[in-house]
Image (cartoon, rainbow, N blue to C red):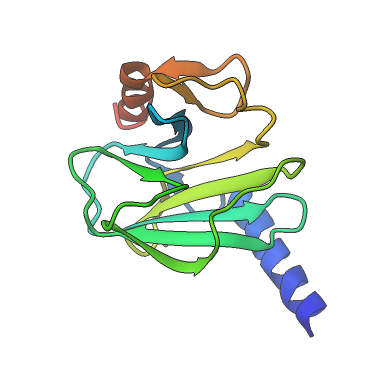
Length: 159
């Protein structure tokens, strides 16, 4: 039964990734806190969502790793510290401790996620090992942004 559910979930994810479901309304990246912790940063454009959900999965199997949500979305961006999430973030399911040698897929959704996706990101811990505070990794070794460039990249999607 679990193989069937994984197959259905995988097919649903493929449908979403082909762009037939949602519009992209922002950007997702990885940053480092001053103490070296890995953070997921989400920046959006347009209307501020009432709820933001961040999901982490194993890329190869689409197996869920962790799912977080927050209603404290601020003004255009939020950051989720994976080592020590603030009280603004609720762990809906899973465990946010990531392991080397695994390709992770991260996605962020505003509100119900039915109308839009903020963005998605694929990475390994090895790819972000040299990431320093002040840099934002957005999925390619050549795509290291400053924080302001990251915010601007999200805003360009609504321009």
